[in-house]
Length: 395
Image (cartoon, rainbow, N blue to C red):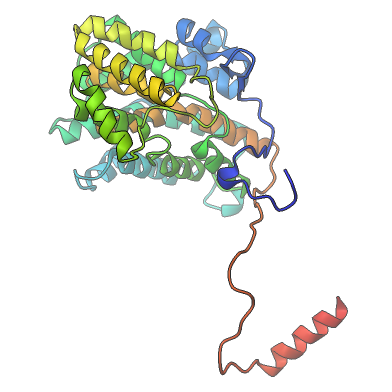
């Protein structure tokens, strides 16, 4: 990279170290603290992966039990959070609900004493805040979907683990094991992905010594965009627009002729295909079989095959997760809030990592505007002019 070379979108720019995750180019595997994510998704509950991201190691049985106890203590939807959500129009995007809810939770946490100087918090305080957000988000996301359907709050069930309870609070019935397993895998796959846009946003906010909640709220704002978290919603819209496998070719002919961006394909990091896709596609296959929906698999395969053949661009995680969430019963607008409930673990791991070895993130820019010019008729103040001249001489 040459001096003053502009890398739009910071493409290819390495800005810091992280021990939280990486993509191993040799195996094309996404690693969480060194563990391939496909191995974690196949063997671990989401709670164990959250513990890993925060602490660097997988928990032993006692540590996992302690985290589960803490999570279950904060599962219920706080009354003030529900009240804040209820003030929002039903037409509000669910991402706005979640962003508002996270702000309310943060404003209600007075551990910092209300001082801006104390806002960043100790490592212990920030871990506690991370667990509190992680525990509360399923109730927030579930209630958001239910209120748009004219339904009330479903209280949490302490007999169910994180993923099963999330589904219980959303749908009001205990889910089948195959559905819990597919959902659990999706939560693990979405939990972390290095310096993506929302994670980097969280780290920038943290670098100012702001608080963890502010960093998460900023990350939620970044995730709302369709080039980031909103892509899984867009995938379902595309599939609904196509309708069935036999309509893929004419639909794609028209879409490419119009130069439309086909969401669910391509990734800034992966050039040979998103390493998370096979695991999520396998979960989708189990849901297709469970719900007896072969037409979903047919449309998925037809669009993937045709697009890859024409463009050489492979699916990313959003491509299989969109139809999987739809089969489970989530509204399309709920897809990106589900992403938040998962990614809050990665965000907060990065927030704590940034705080532990902090430097203010403040990049430079290359100015390409007009040269210096002056307002017609402006007469500088004599005192200010003399001061400026003295400072110039001193330099």
